[in-house]
Length: 150
Ligand code: FES
Image (cartoon, rainbow, N blue to C red; front, side, top):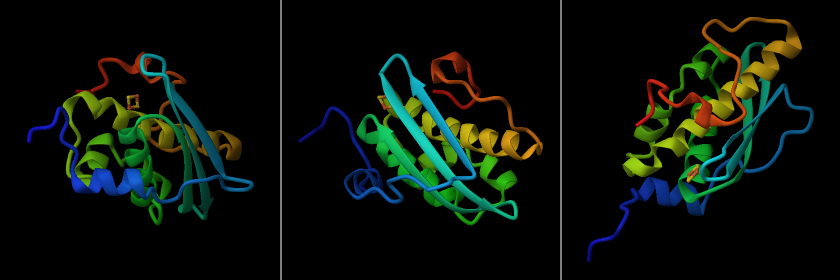
């Protein structure tokens, strides 16, 4: 039987059993990003010590792909330096999930941007510059034409 949308087993796993859901008390950085078109919102919390992401948690009010990409992106950034975490792209998140249907690519962009927003919060709070980090957008739709978009 064919389905309208095909999701990988990994997407289904991270959707039904998401890792790192919740909040971090006294986080080093928090970032919230939404997508006005679909109404989904993602909030990322980072605990950063000595420039390394020690912990990451998220709260996502959104679709299954948004939950799965949030879950995967937290797994990918934990243990990385802030510079390495910045380089975790939505493509890397999608690859780690064995792909997403084309109409769901924007959900992974939300995950990438939420991490950037949390890193920005951390950097501005601590008066440091993370090379390549740009001010985050509140609504991901502002980033239309982003190079890693569909
Ligand atoms: Fe909006 Fe997935 S439909 S983030």
